[in-house]
Length: 481
Ligand SMILES: *[C@@H]1O[C@H](CO)[C@@H](O)[C@H](O)[C@H]1NC(C)=O
Ligand SMILES: *[C@@H]1O[C@H](CO)[C@@H](O)[C@H](O)[C@H]1NC(C)=O
Image (cartoon, rainbow, N blue to C red; front, side, top):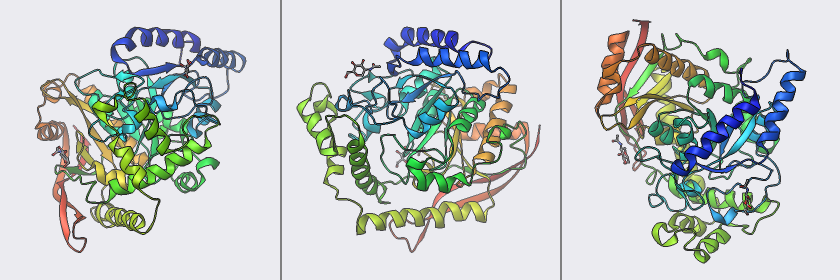
């Protein structure tokens, strides 16, 4: 980067101060950011030939669930955690500090990842920040990160995802979002929901920026040792940058999904998440250095005692209360976890292998989201256009664990190709039936070889029977038109 870190930081802070009263996407600015930027500039001057990370000197936002051991608060958007002090930086923050990144501040989110009251807490709303908004619906829960990027306040930020929190808001705010394989990035020091599904990943304006940030945060962390050591096998020598390949989409087999599969209640996912949330959040709160809340029960009490501050009347806290009623991971929960694993293994994984697919491609949100969440699979969402009402939508590339290199190649190639074709008016003015629009545009642009495809997932009500849940076409791009 040609701009000095301190100048860049000052420019960004001005933009945050200007835009934030309107967008409400940033909860706090790091009082220490200036010192970090000055340090980055000093390192640059004193050691000009040293190979530096892309993230060196770059100001970035963290979702307000990714802990920093400094003057900033990590609160999941709730007043309950305001003033609490974490013992140490989150694993990913430590890695960012090591490469000289500048932590600009904390981005807003849907409070408690909307796990305070699912479907009742408005997307992008938290007690501390109020309603963050750019377009009609910011979606959630990494809303503040996505909005800040969409508005050009910052160039990169970190979010977290358990079930769609990264990909949904990226989609709705027209930014690139990378959801890494669970364990590729450390979850230590991040307000948890489920160690099976939680993952931390970059949001950025371009695939290249997201990938560069990914390179800075992946890898083993002794504080999250089991998952990160297991996933470390996937990290390629030389990192992920090498897969920013303009022709990376050629020859790949895609499963293009046109049928919706989403049933997190009957699959047992929600019940299990609630049990996991209780035990993991209790653990997280216990380990804080200073805090007036030490358990989920304390948080529920806090909300009850501060109904106006937390808008308890309006939004309630049903999901917290239901989680509190769970009682740890026992027989029923273990069965549910096994069942989700079976769904992944015999459904998505089997079909990806049977059809020899490189990626599952879905237009817009929600299609196949549950499948990818419950299995801890990676994905990248790239802006793909705008619907007739002006709402952006993304195209999503998902794959098997550790398939980031392929997904990055495809996402990057898609991004570069659609940019090169600028402006492709049909492409950016597609309506709800954009799937077919996308398809035709792509078909017009490239040579396709496609076959019908049925991805089946075991029937969630009757595992003995198989149920067609994902339907699509199998595509292969043979050359670039
Ligand atoms: C963190 O919260 C405290 C209130 O408990 C506040 O005084 C402080 O300014 C906050 N930190 C930042 C960086 O906003
Ligand atoms: C997919 O299913 C979910 C849950 O049943 C529903 O809310 C959503 O609208 C569906 N999406 C599409 C594109 O059909």
